[in-house]
Image 1: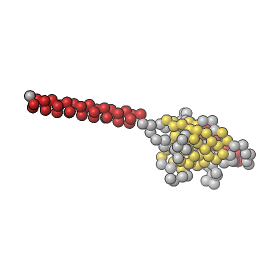
Image 2 (image 1 turned 45 degrees about the vertical axis):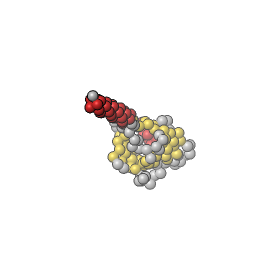
Image 3 (image 1 turned 30 degrees about the horizontal axis):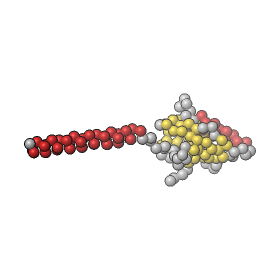
Length: 151
């Protein structure tokens, strides 16, 4: 009988260990299933090289910066802008962007309008290391950008 008790205790210990492992493994699987993938744009800064197939001069002060907290800001050439952005997979949407209201020479104001409109019409993105393409809802290219920060 003493031998039978040892076998029974060993069997109970193995069953208890199996239940414990199953619970832990299930918890890890659930944690992995609900983990949100990292934001591939957070902490980066970009300058447009092309807006709607028109090349942009390297010397312009136009850029967009994506913060880790979902905020977006930058310079549209003449004015500064800010707002928020949301990413879900390859989908990208900007809130209504607020801007300062300085007046600048017409070429800069035209560039600013094209840049801000392209951001607002963006619905998806493709990133390839230091290159970023913003697309509208139909998949058309709104803007091509180059990364300007290297951290």
